[in-house]
Image 1 (cartoon, rainbow, N blue to C red):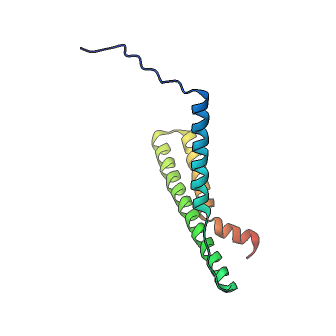
Image 2 (cartoon, rainbow, N blue to C red):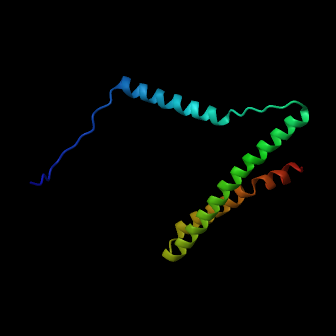
Image 3 (spheres, rainbow, N blue to C red):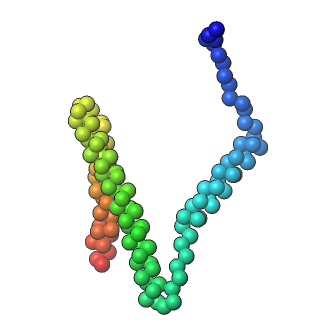
Length: 117
């Protein structure tokens, strides 16, 4: 026996439950965000503190470079697909993604050129 007209409806979420869920989500996001940003640095002297900050800076710029390379690769794939399908809007988006990936990949070098250090 096949039922053709099966109507399913979502259960309604009332105001208090919706508010409680949104507060719960906000708290979880805040806890995860604060746990990711809290970095304990132990340093005995000023030289060690500077070394720790430089290492953290190198790590963060490495993450930014990885994200830039991912965007760069995605942009190249998008341009290639647009050339195959002859879609000019996708081609424009692909070139913008490639340009953004290049800028993000070389963010540290661009920042050093701007600040002169």
